[in-house]
Image (cartoon, rainbow, N blue to C red; front, side, top):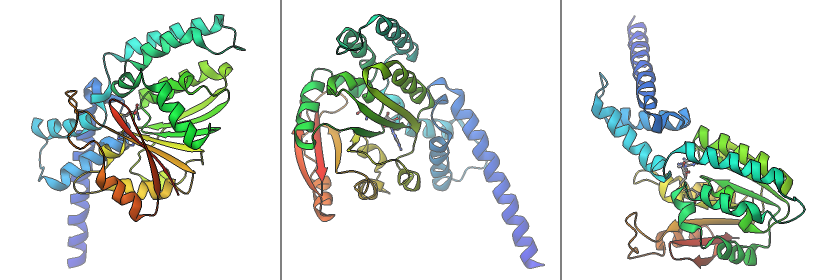
Length: 296
Ligand SMILES: C[S@@+](CC[C@H](N)C(=O)[O-])C[C@H]1O[C@@H](n2cnc3c(N)ncnc32)[C@H](O)[C@@H]1O
């Protein structure tokens, strides 16, 4: 009898929690800014919130707190409206249909730069992209396959890589970004870019372990986002990815969001972690960013 009562209580508790979770998911996604983030990511933040707070009835404060966590992860990196970049993609398609694909796609660079400028990290890198890829590929050689996790709009910088044929697997957590990148990949296929974009949560290490192998794996400005005070999946992520590649390129901002240089641009904690798990690294610095080219 006692066991049945306990089971009924557990059942009621699970039903209440599920209904709270579903309601919160709907409420959070009502705001356009969060509507295209993968459910998996939003649900993770909801569950973290429900674990830390006693929620019986959803309040505005609950929604505000969860949205602000999601803002840090994703939405603060977009500049301007997504409709602008969609228009630019149409322009790119039109220009490319008139280009001679046997030549380098120079005619498209102007539009590419405008698309890159719609994402904060890519815009900051605009003047440095050529130098960054030159220096990375001096260490790694030019890759045949790149894996880019938490990619944002970085795959759009393909023309700066100066590689004639490249397989590019791009992963992020926003459905609209993923669709946008797949459209871009279709347009760029005549220029030797064979790309595919998919939803992937970098913290879901089971799913990460199923991605394909690559010559280089990019984790550009991602690790600071997935590591929190309570959990640091970054180390395990690097260990798993090192079985899939010879080189991981991880980067960190060296300026604050306000644009001021950081006091400690080198990431000593990160460097010590790499040494502890027996990985070597070389450093490349630009005005805004520090890159670690990591290998065994
Ligand atoms: C600072 S932006 C950097 C974008 C790109 N890597 C670059 O450097 O241009 C961080 C990116 O990581 C993505 N992101 C955040 N959390 C993630 C997670 N758990 N898994 C995969 N991507 C994530 C965001 O959606 C965003 O596009």
